[in-house]
Length: 348
Ligand SMILES: C[S@@+](CC[C@H](N)C(=O)[O-])C[C@H]1O[C@@H](n2cnc3c(N)ncnc32)[C@H](O)[C@@H]1O
Image (cartoon, rainbow, N blue to C red; front, side, top):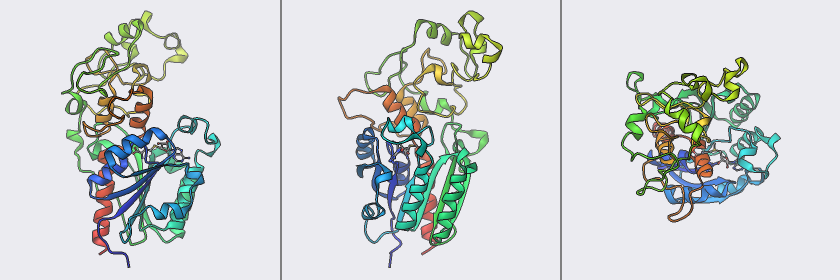
């Protein structure tokens, strides 16, 4: 019989390890991570300290996944399937039409391996998609009790407005995500999180941290950011600085592109494109530049020494930004981990 002690987790779609690292902080032993992107190997192994398997989930056998769990421990199967158009992740190695089929594959693995606990995180929109109803049906038919909710990550200590769907399922009994621990009247802010970092020029890199580096800006974008107000939009600029599409009545949407963050609020959702000032409200609150990779990682609640590339290796800005923007915020991963531990403790 399984002894209910420290559980062992296998993380499908492990990325750079945001979810795994958070679960580990909560005391869950992460035994392995699986992802088809080779750039996840270094950060996953260096920070989580578990085996990384560079594999396409479509070719994965449930037996292989089963073999990765530590013996005689409750098993946790976690997975955060890609939530953006598939092509950005697979770079031609998988069919884009398969975007949601990965969730079916995840359900199939869960059904076959039948770990005590399954957890999944995804974009909130997924809750309205038929593939999610199918995922729930497979787990229920396999005897799982489950709960899911759309959470605001700032309620879990993440200095960011980021809504996510979190599902927990168990063969042992009722399971749910712990209630939020943060009060809306005192949300974690951009200032609390990145206010202490060295100032940078656009295109600059800190001498003490190669990840504290930010993208350069064209002369036009430098003029634009100088006119940008925290929390403001391109509407604050004189007409001559506006992009052609913003000068037309039809181009009045997307007001948050070319914006600056506000010091005393949570950041907007950190996407895989956060390194570009023109891609969202990713301008630094007062320095004339986009936020740096380290700032993005801190806003995703990675610890300040989380390492994304080996010492001395070239930092590929777009590639590291993708790993950071794709991650489950570590603080949310820790809340998921604590919820699993409380559930297992209650079931003993
Ligand atoms: C949303 S990210 C996961 C983030 C990760 N859980 C974290 O917290 O850092 C989705 C991941 O799925 C991976 N992926 C996409 N298609 C895959 C496939 N067919 N097999 C395995 N991994 C895949 C991507 O490379 C990406 O790292």
